[in-house]
Length: 280
Image (cartoon, rainbow, N blue to C red):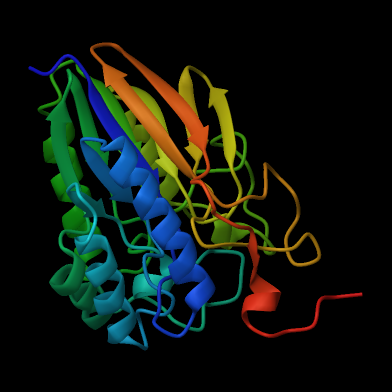
């Protein structure tokens, strides 16, 4: 067994041929990865800009990731397969479908995974399929139960696109912010299932803000977007609004986290990217 395992998490790259500033930021991230050479790269979702309506966005994103010097694994985000419904908010304009999920797995690979390294068990989940009623949702929960039954006491790191919650598992869902987090009742089920193992880390993305906090011995890392930031006029400030990535170093029974930015990576503003005038 290797004494350590180095994982680099990138998130919310939002790649498409038509958005050069996002491509430029990805190239800066690629150069950083080439210089640091982790054991594995994880893109934790929103790999593409608009996967549900533009399969070419997924294809282009995969082409850029294929050029990285290390292996990659992926998790779907709402911009890859569609957004999941919540109990309190309006229905998303683009829900996940069997077709959009299949497009993701065909182009990018598995949308859930489990592997072991440096004495740890790593699990990645498709958080966007939760609460959809699609066949893949029940299938994933069955798969997860089987995986957790074989953890055998190892510390567990969970990765998914959406954070589980804002501050605590019992946070109420609010109409304006429910789409930021794993929705109920799926959230409760996930938390209960991982309560049976030694969960140490939950890594996510989605919010386009960097955040690092601990709740009841579980460290929660929100990876920033590698591509762009969202202005305070459009989104409340929760953590740190900057583009960047996260580096992890796992050793048996411990891990370290480094919050970094690639040299030359810039804070592309979403409104400027889309050619919209900023709010007054």
